Image (cartoon, rainbow, N blue to C red):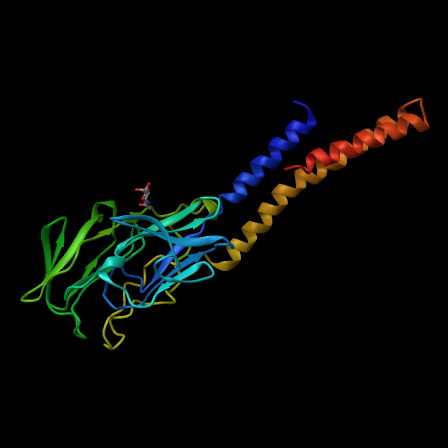
Length: 297
Ligand SMILES: *[C@@H]1O[C@H](CO)[C@@H](O)[C@H](O)[C@H]1NC(C)=O
C-alpha cells in the first residue's frame, strides 16, 4: 500500500471514530409520564449545532421541533403546555442523520400517572416508581408489571432494589376510585465496565452524580418525593473535552506526520536529481499537487 492511500485510510478511520460522538436526549421532568398542561423540556446534550429534537407519533413521523410543535432553542425544545396528543417517541437527530437515544413520553389526560424514569436505569441501582394523582401526596396504589399486580403500597411509592434485566417491563399503577395510569416501559442498562471508553456508552454515564433536576410533581406539593436519584445523568463535561482533544490529536498527528514525510521525500528526490533547475521545478509542482489532493477530503 503506498503512503497516500495508507494516509487516507488513517485519516478516514479517525474521522469516523470522531463523528460517532453521540448526542444524548434528556427530558425535564425526568419522567416518562406527565399530566397534560405540564411543561416538558427536551435537551440534546453533547450536541453541536445542527442537532434538533424530532418525534414520532402514531400518525406522524420524524416531525421536527418548531415545525408544528414545540419551541426550539438551540438543540433544545420546549413544549410549554403538553397535550395527550404530544405522547410519542422523541430523539435528537443531526443534519447528517445521526440519532441519539430515544425517550417515550406519555402525556395523560386522565387522573393517575406513574412517574417512572424516562431514561434507562443502571443495573444494580434502586429505582422508585411513584403513583400520582393531581393531589399533593401520592395515594395508596397497586403496582402492575406486564399486567400482573406485583405490589400494593400505602404511600404510592414502589422501590425496586438493585434492579436487574429481569425488572424490565411495562409498569402501571392503579388508585382506588381514581383509575389507572398509562403503561410505561422501564429499561435497565448494563453497568458500564470501567475500562470502556466514554464515546461507546450512549446511555450510561461513567459516574452517577447527584441529579441536577428532580422530577417536579404536577401539583405544588412539597419537594419531599422526588424521583430516585439514580436516574442516569449526563457525562461529566471534562471527560467529554478530554475525549475531543484526544480525538483531534488522533486525527491530526498521522495527517501531519505523513504530510511532513511526503514533503521531505519529494525534497530529497529533488535534491538528488541531476537536473538541477528544471527538475526541481517539476518536482515542486508534484509536491503541490500531492498536497492539494490530500486536502480534497
Ligand atoms: C419513526 O418512524 C419511522 C417511520 O415509521 C421509523 O422508520 C423510525 O424508526 C421511527 N423512529 C423511532 C425512533 O421510533
